[in-house]
Length: 279
Image (cartoon, rainbow, N blue to C red; front, side, top):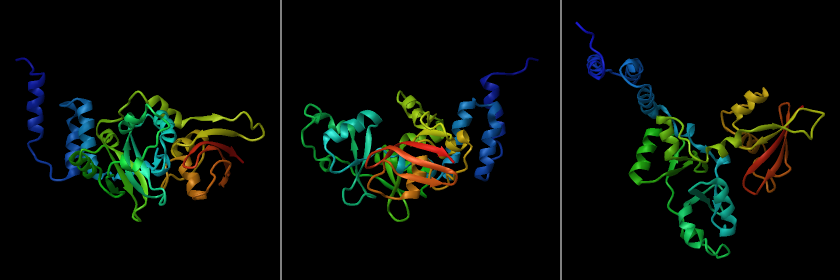
Protein backbone atom coordinates (compact mmCIF):
# COMPACT_ATOMS: atom_id res chain seq x y z
CA UNK A 1 0.00 0.00 0.00
CA UNK A 2 1.60 3.26 -1.08
CA UNK A 3 1.71 6.34 1.14
CA UNK A 4 -0.66 9.08 0.01
CA UNK A 5 1.03 12.39 -0.70
CA UNK A 6 0.66 15.67 -2.56
CA UNK A 7 -2.14 18.26 -2.52
CA UNK A 8 -4.87 15.66 -1.83
CA UNK A 9 -3.20 14.53 1.38
CA UNK A 10 -2.57 18.15 2.39
CA UNK A 11 -6.22 19.20 1.99
CA UNK A 12 -7.47 16.12 3.85
CA UNK A 13 -5.01 16.77 6.65
CA UNK A 14 -6.05 20.41 6.84
CA UNK A 15 -9.76 19.51 6.96
CA UNK A 16 -9.04 17.06 9.75
CA UNK A 17 -6.98 19.68 11.57
CA UNK A 18 -9.87 22.15 11.31
CA UNK A 19 -12.32 19.60 12.74
CA UNK A 20 -12.42 21.48 16.05
CA UNK A 21 -13.30 25.14 15.60
CA UNK A 22 -11.09 27.57 17.56
CA UNK A 23 -12.97 29.67 20.11
CA UNK A 24 -10.53 32.56 20.59
CA UNK A 25 -8.21 34.62 18.41
CA UNK A 26 -5.18 33.13 20.16
CA UNK A 27 -6.43 29.61 19.43
CA UNK A 28 -6.95 30.55 15.79
CA UNK A 29 -3.47 32.08 15.59
CA UNK A 30 -1.96 28.93 17.10
CA UNK A 31 -3.91 26.85 14.61
CA UNK A 32 -2.44 28.88 11.74
CA UNK A 33 1.07 28.54 13.16
CA UNK A 34 0.63 24.80 13.57
CA UNK A 35 -0.58 24.44 9.98
CA UNK A 36 2.86 25.02 8.45
CA UNK A 37 3.01 21.41 7.29
CA UNK A 38 -0.11 21.97 5.17
CA UNK A 39 0.50 25.52 3.88
CA UNK A 40 3.31 27.41 2.20
CA UNK A 41 5.41 29.56 4.59
CA UNK A 42 4.38 32.77 2.79
CA UNK A 43 0.70 31.85 3.18
CA UNK A 44 1.14 31.21 6.89
CA UNK A 45 2.96 34.55 7.31
CA UNK A 46 0.14 36.42 5.55
CA UNK A 47 -2.51 34.72 7.67
CA UNK A 48 -0.59 35.68 10.79
CA UNK A 49 -0.40 39.26 9.52
CA UNK A 50 -4.16 39.38 8.94
CA UNK A 51 -4.87 38.01 12.42
CA UNK A 52 -2.46 40.51 14.00
CA UNK A 53 -4.10 43.57 12.36
CA UNK A 54 -6.90 44.00 14.96
CA UNK A 55 -4.25 44.07 17.71
CA UNK A 56 -2.06 46.61 15.88
CA UNK A 57 -2.76 50.27 16.63
CA UNK A 58 -2.23 52.70 13.79
CA UNK A 59 0.39 54.61 15.83
CA UNK A 60 2.62 51.52 15.50
CA UNK A 61 2.69 51.62 11.69
CA UNK A 62 2.33 55.32 10.89
CA UNK A 63 5.04 57.66 9.65
CA UNK A 64 5.57 60.17 12.50
CA UNK A 65 5.10 63.90 11.98
CA UNK A 66 8.86 64.54 12.10
CA UNK A 67 9.42 62.18 9.15
CA UNK A 68 6.52 63.39 6.99
CA UNK A 69 7.28 65.02 3.64
CA UNK A 70 4.72 67.81 3.50
CA UNK A 71 3.80 71.09 1.83
CA UNK A 72 2.33 74.42 2.96
CA UNK A 73 -0.86 75.79 1.44
CA UNK A 74 0.94 78.97 0.34
CA UNK A 75 3.78 77.12 -1.45
CA UNK A 76 4.39 77.93 -5.09
CA UNK A 77 5.32 75.51 -7.85
CA UNK A 78 9.03 76.38 -7.71
CA UNK A 79 8.98 75.52 -3.97
CA UNK A 80 7.16 72.25 -4.56
CA UNK A 81 9.08 70.78 -7.51
CA UNK A 82 12.31 69.99 -5.58
CA UNK A 83 10.26 68.26 -2.87
CA UNK A 84 8.42 66.18 -5.47
CA UNK A 85 11.58 65.08 -7.26
CA UNK A 86 13.67 64.37 -4.13
CA UNK A 87 10.99 62.44 -2.25
CA UNK A 88 9.48 60.59 -5.26
CA UNK A 89 6.18 60.49 -3.37
CA UNK A 90 2.86 60.74 -5.16
CA UNK A 91 0.79 62.25 -2.32
CA UNK A 92 1.65 65.07 0.06
CA UNK A 93 -0.16 66.36 3.15
CA UNK A 94 -0.66 70.12 3.00
CA UNK A 95 -0.47 72.12 6.24
CA UNK A 96 -2.41 75.26 7.02
CA UNK A 97 -0.39 78.47 6.81
CA UNK A 98 -1.84 79.92 10.03
CA UNK A 99 -2.19 76.66 11.99
CA UNK A 100 1.03 74.66 11.53
CA UNK A 101 -0.36 71.56 13.28
CA UNK A 102 -3.38 71.28 10.99
CA UNK A 103 -3.50 69.43 7.68
CA UNK A 104 -5.99 71.07 5.32
CA UNK A 105 -5.74 68.60 2.46
CA UNK A 106 -3.70 66.14 0.41
CA UNK A 107 -2.05 67.13 -2.85
CA UNK A 108 -1.61 64.51 -5.57
CA UNK A 109 1.54 65.01 -7.63
CA UNK A 110 -0.36 64.19 -10.82
CA UNK A 111 -2.60 67.24 -10.26
CA UNK A 112 0.45 69.46 -10.86
CA UNK A 113 1.22 67.99 -14.29
CA UNK A 114 -0.77 70.64 -16.22
CA UNK A 115 1.41 73.37 -14.66
CA UNK A 116 4.85 71.88 -15.32
CA UNK A 117 5.20 73.59 -18.69
CA UNK A 118 5.35 76.93 -16.81
CA UNK A 119 7.25 76.38 -13.53
CA UNK A 120 7.02 80.07 -12.60
CA UNK A 121 3.24 80.15 -12.96
CA UNK A 122 1.12 80.95 -9.90
CA UNK A 123 -0.49 77.82 -8.50
CA UNK A 124 -3.29 77.89 -5.95
CA UNK A 125 -2.69 74.70 -3.97
CA UNK A 126 -5.91 75.16 -2.00
CA UNK A 127 -7.86 74.68 -5.24
CA UNK A 128 -6.05 71.40 -6.01
CA UNK A 129 -5.93 69.61 -2.67
CA UNK A 130 -8.23 66.69 -1.85
CA UNK A 131 -10.20 66.28 1.37
CA UNK A 132 -8.01 64.36 3.85
CA UNK A 133 -9.13 61.31 5.79
CA UNK A 134 -8.45 61.82 9.52
CA UNK A 135 -8.02 58.92 11.93
CA UNK A 136 -7.01 58.74 15.62
CA UNK A 137 -3.75 57.20 16.78
CA UNK A 138 -5.69 54.56 18.69
CA UNK A 139 -7.54 53.24 15.61
CA UNK A 140 -7.01 49.58 14.78
CA UNK A 141 -5.13 48.80 11.59
CA UNK A 142 -7.90 46.53 10.27
CA UNK A 143 -10.46 49.34 10.73
CA UNK A 144 -8.26 51.83 8.87
CA UNK A 145 -7.65 49.35 6.06
CA UNK A 146 -11.42 49.03 5.65
CA UNK A 147 -11.85 52.84 5.67
CA UNK A 148 -9.16 53.34 3.04
CA UNK A 149 -10.74 50.66 0.87
CA UNK A 150 -14.27 52.04 1.24
CA UNK A 151 -13.22 55.63 0.51
CA UNK A 152 -10.79 54.59 -2.28
CA UNK A 153 -8.08 56.57 -0.49
CA UNK A 154 -4.39 55.70 -0.27
CA UNK A 155 -3.37 57.96 2.62
CA UNK A 156 -4.83 59.03 5.98
CA UNK A 157 -3.74 61.73 8.42
CA UNK A 158 -3.25 60.53 11.99
CA UNK A 159 -4.24 62.91 14.79
CA UNK A 160 -3.59 62.78 18.53
CA UNK A 161 -6.08 63.24 21.36
CA UNK A 162 -5.79 67.04 21.00
CA UNK A 163 -6.57 67.03 17.29
CA UNK A 164 -3.00 67.88 16.23
CA UNK A 165 -1.30 66.00 13.41
CA UNK A 166 0.92 63.22 14.76
CA UNK A 167 1.68 61.40 11.50
CA UNK A 168 0.29 59.75 8.43
CA UNK A 169 -0.40 56.21 7.29
CA UNK A 170 -0.68 54.82 3.79
CA UNK A 171 -2.41 51.82 2.32
CA UNK A 172 1.03 50.34 1.65
CA UNK A 173 1.99 50.70 5.33
CA UNK A 174 -0.93 48.51 6.39
CA UNK A 175 -0.53 45.99 3.57
CA UNK A 176 3.10 45.55 4.61
CA UNK A 177 1.82 44.38 8.01
CA UNK A 178 0.20 41.51 6.12
CA UNK A 179 2.58 40.63 3.30
CA UNK A 180 5.87 42.03 4.63
CA UNK A 181 8.07 44.78 3.23
CA UNK A 182 7.05 45.98 -0.23
CA UNK A 183 10.18 47.20 -2.00
CA UNK A 184 10.13 49.59 -4.92
CA UNK A 185 12.66 51.47 -7.01
CA UNK A 186 12.96 54.20 -4.38
CA UNK A 187 13.76 51.97 -1.40
CA UNK A 188 17.52 52.23 -1.92
CA UNK A 189 17.22 55.97 -1.41
CA UNK A 190 15.13 55.43 1.72
CA UNK A 191 17.86 53.24 3.20
CA UNK A 192 20.19 56.24 3.12
CA UNK A 193 18.05 57.84 5.84
CA UNK A 194 19.51 55.26 8.25
CA UNK A 195 23.19 55.97 7.55
CA UNK A 196 25.52 56.92 10.36
CA UNK A 197 28.97 57.98 9.13
CA UNK A 198 32.09 58.93 11.14
CA UNK A 199 32.79 62.67 11.09
CA UNK A 200 36.47 63.17 10.21
CA UNK A 201 36.37 66.85 11.26
CA UNK A 202 36.20 65.91 14.95
CA UNK A 203 39.38 64.12 16.00
CA UNK A 204 39.30 65.00 19.70
CA UNK A 205 36.02 63.22 20.49
CA UNK A 206 34.08 60.46 18.72
CA UNK A 207 31.63 62.12 16.28
CA UNK A 208 29.25 61.00 13.57
CA UNK A 209 27.11 62.56 10.86
CA UNK A 210 23.60 61.15 11.23
CA UNK A 211 20.73 61.25 8.76
CA UNK A 212 17.75 62.86 10.50
CA UNK A 213 15.34 59.99 9.82
CA UNK A 214 17.62 57.39 11.39
CA UNK A 215 15.48 55.31 13.79
CA UNK A 216 16.46 55.74 17.44
CA UNK A 217 16.67 51.97 17.79
CA UNK A 218 19.20 51.85 14.93
CA UNK A 219 21.17 54.73 16.47
CA UNK A 220 21.23 52.99 19.87
CA UNK A 221 22.36 49.69 18.39
CA UNK A 222 25.03 51.20 16.15
CA UNK A 223 26.54 53.63 18.66
CA UNK A 224 25.75 51.88 21.95
CA UNK A 225 23.38 54.63 23.10
CA UNK A 226 20.31 54.30 25.30
CA UNK A 227 17.74 56.83 24.10
CA UNK A 228 14.06 55.98 24.52
CA UNK A 229 11.89 55.51 21.43
CA UNK A 230 8.61 55.23 23.35
CA UNK A 231 7.28 58.63 22.17
CA UNK A 232 9.33 59.37 19.04
CA UNK A 233 10.99 57.01 16.57
CA UNK A 234 13.71 59.02 14.81
CA UNK A 235 16.76 60.99 15.91
CA UNK A 236 15.19 64.15 14.43
CA UNK A 237 12.05 63.49 16.46
CA UNK A 238 14.16 63.08 19.59
CA UNK A 239 15.77 66.49 19.07
CA UNK A 240 12.53 68.25 18.13
CA UNK A 241 10.91 66.82 21.24
CA UNK A 242 13.65 68.43 23.29
CA UNK A 243 13.81 71.89 21.66
CA UNK A 244 10.18 72.29 20.56
CA UNK A 245 9.24 74.68 17.78
CA UNK A 246 12.00 77.17 16.91
CA UNK A 247 12.32 79.62 14.06
CA UNK A 248 15.78 78.50 12.95
CA UNK A 249 16.57 74.79 13.30
CA UNK A 250 19.97 74.88 11.59
CA UNK A 251 22.82 75.34 14.05
CA UNK A 252 20.82 74.39 17.13
CA UNK A 253 22.86 72.51 19.74
CA UNK A 254 21.11 70.01 22.00
CA UNK A 255 22.69 68.29 25.02
CA UNK A 256 21.15 64.89 25.79
CA UNK A 257 22.64 62.51 28.34
CA UNK A 258 26.32 62.13 27.37
CA UNK A 259 25.79 63.30 23.79
CA UNK A 260 25.92 66.68 22.05
CA UNK A 261 23.79 66.98 18.90
CA UNK A 262 24.22 69.81 16.40
CA UNK A 263 21.71 70.32 13.59
CA UNK A 264 23.98 70.65 10.56
CA UNK A 265 21.42 70.93 7.77
CA UNK A 266 17.74 71.91 8.05
CA UNK A 267 15.10 74.05 6.45
CA UNK A 268 12.10 75.79 7.98
CA UNK A 269 10.20 72.51 8.32
CA UNK A 270 12.51 69.56 8.70
CA UNK A 271 15.95 68.43 9.82
CA UNK A 272 18.19 66.64 7.31
CA UNK A 273 21.64 66.13 8.87
CA UNK A 274 22.82 65.99 12.47
CA UNK A 275 26.29 65.84 14.03
CA UNK A 276 26.38 63.55 17.08
CA UNK A 277 29.35 63.85 19.45
CA UNK A 278 29.87 61.51 22.39
CA UNK A 279 31.16 63.42 25.44
